[in-house]
Amino acid sequence: MRIKGSQNGIEENIEKTAAQKAALRRQMKQLRAELSDGERRHAGESCAAQLRQLPEFTRCDLLLAYMSHGAELPTAGIIEEALEKGMRVAVPRVTGPGTMEFYEIYSLSECASGAYGIPEPAGIRERLMHPEEFESAAVLLPGLAFTKDGARLGYGGGYYDRYFSEHRKAYRSGLTYGFALVEHLSCEPHDIRADVVLAPVFP
Image (cartoon, rainbow, N blue to C red; front, side):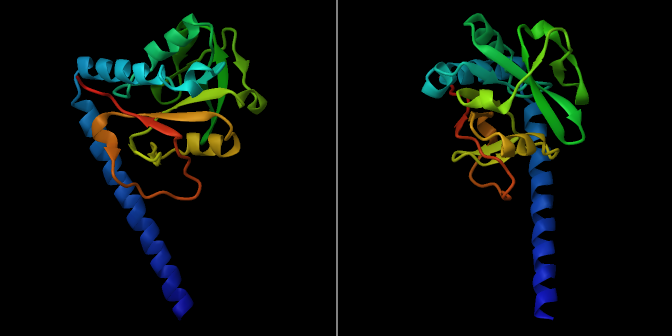
């Protein structure tokens, strides 16, 4: 009976954690939706300026970047700047339920609306990236919320958790709005963490 009770307790905790995550996701999406275009633009520019100060970013030869969509903290400027500086850039494409791969691009114009409406490589002259190339790579990690020590609340699909659980060499920078920098997040063993978290700095 004790074993059964313990199992029930574990299941209740899992359900409680899932409900808390779902509620926080709704809250973060609502707050994002209330941002103006100018506020989103400033957030992207501020985080880009902070990235330029990170040695792990400035000395990397490959950037694995997410393609921002909707009210996400914008990354187009960061990607364009990296390409202009001669840095190699790769962005993800959904390849199946819960799975994705990174493909090298040479221009944002090579991307088109894909899974969930998110821009992804459209097959113009793409090249699949291999894990051995990630030794000196930097990652822009999306998320709905982060803690200062790198815990991350994703969108619930598990794409980034699955991918980077196998490819851990790259340096991961979480980009987030100030209101989405929270004190605590309930994490599970498979949840990946950011090595550094950047939020906008306002003058």
